[in-house]
Structure formats: C-alpha cells, structure tokens
Length: 93
Image 1 (tube, rainbow, N blue to C red):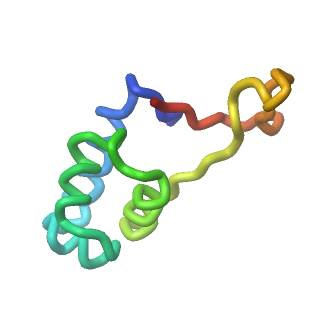
Image 2: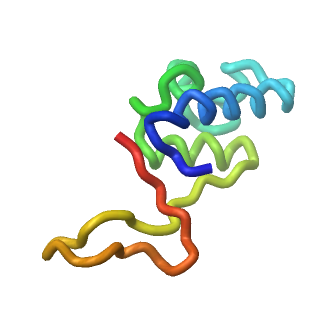
C-alpha cells in the first residue's frame, strides 16, 4: 500500500483491524508496542499526525512490516527520481 493523504484513512483502519484481530485493547497494544495509548488512538484515527518512526514501532509490535523503499521526487539539483528500480515510494503530506 502506498501511503498518501488519500490512503491514510485505509491505513488507519488496517491498524485498528489488526489490533482487534489479535484481541488487543488499545492499552494492551500500547504495552506490547511500547507506545502510549494516546498514540494508538492517534494512529488509528489520524496517522498523518504520527511520526514514521513511531508508526514503524507500532506496526512492528503488531507483527506487521512498514517500510520505506525509495524516495520519489527531484533530487537536490532537480535531478531525476531517486527511487530504486522496482520500488514503491512512500509519499505523504
């Protein structure tokens, strides 16, 4: 799944669905993932406000993988796309 402003609600829903599938309350998921319960709430409602590092911590704690595979856009000198061949870049707001 490419993360874009348009796909953030689906990403949030996937996080909540996985947590519930595992039978975890927000407090239990927070303890397992070493984050606060308010972070779980924020990630499940508005992940665009969360840092990438904390989202990776949450997904890893739930047994999921969140990875950044490339960079999309012009380089510092206005060069070509820096993404690795065949990668799917992570983009967002």
